[in-house]
Image 1 (cartoon, helix red, strand yellow):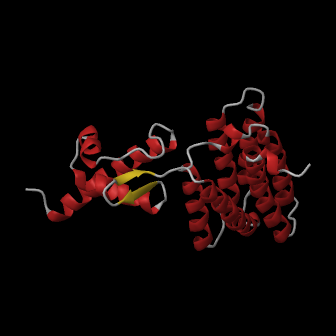
Image 2 (cartoon, rainbow, N blue to C red):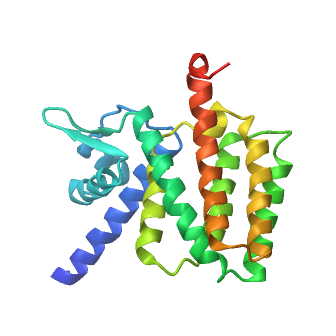
Image 3 (cartoon, rainbow, N blue to C red):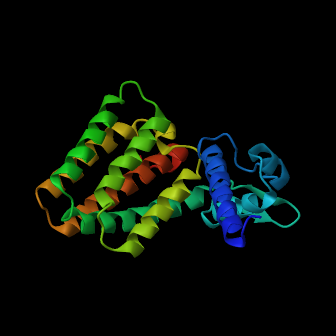
Length: 228
């Protein structure tokens, strides 16, 4: 007979599998905003009980990717422009701070890795693939903030990226022209770090880089509101 501890471990493993399965389908647009997540159907697809699926959905709800409404149940969160704006504003602040604190701790190998990723991004500009560009873009930034010694800041940065992944539509798919400027700004941030610039200058460069992407998104969504 399986012990209680072993059973708990098995349930946790199944919950993680259910979480990853659902997360991938939401992030890859397979599950559109507003889609109902029926526990029994998902459990049958995964060959498990509803218990680990329920736990996985709770995790996704905490990350803002799923909502739960009375008499409706769990469903994929709707894309909310205000939520995107707030997330990008916040991420600009916390990621900028994390990058500044991380900068002095980055090794030459770290910087070479970030530069290689940015070269890959540059090579994609003429044959643009928004999802791949977005994934590499996140990889670039993660190298720069990964050595931040403040775990609270890192947690906030990770939350921000998780929320962005739930906004299914890539910013670069909506404003592909932003990609070229983004690559150039990456190079500028790398130069600042290599030159051991003042941390405040690095922080502001990283913050404004994030906010310029937000500005490009809003300008494309609301062209009539842009001053002539």
